[in-house]
Length: 289
Image (cartoon, helix red, strand yellow):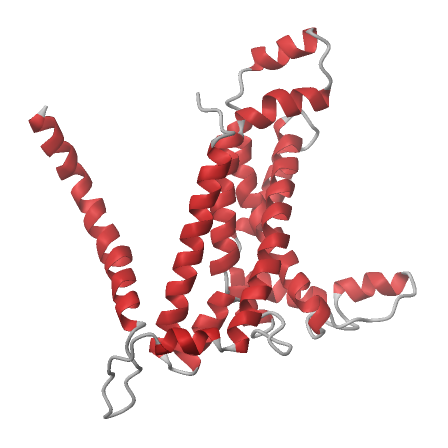
């Protein structure tokens, strides 16, 4: 038994070294850096205690980024997951052109985020874009969706949903194919409707996958920044400035690495709490085989 334990730890050692080197050690260094000032030229950094956190609490842009991130997550997470499940249910059955539909649904996933952003910039271009061309057919005026504060965040969120739904669909499709057909056949013999089969059999059986997808969807809602960088640069007037993009701007545009480290610590804490909460709350309803 002892030899097997040593052998198991030796097998895990390479992965543990990589994980510690690129995740745990940088996380600890980031936490330490949040208590120091940013070095400026010949002036070295010095210990400042909680001043960076006090600055963060008094920072109105930080709170706006947090509000934007909350709205962004509330829009993208349920929509991308719901759309992914609908698409998986559609392409699981025997429908005409099933292979083509699967390819069409999954194609946005393999496209680079920058390419996706450029495609949607064309769609959103006021007056000339595809959306305004369609609106013009119904006599509607052109609208600058990305340049208007009340619509910019939702326009960016639509891009994320379009991009991520196909990726989540693959996991749902795999989960649906593991459901024993005998369960569904027995339910049909008992006179169960399609909705009852979905609610009582399909949904409980795919809950482990739903838990996995929900955790990843929440993480993506916080860490995705490429399309915001390409489409809006956080504007107009910080309307699309979410937390991770704000960290990027503070760290690499304003070159205030200490304050960026402070914001990163907060993001890590938020993600950890959200992931833990999802696991604790949803795991009670998960049926494992």
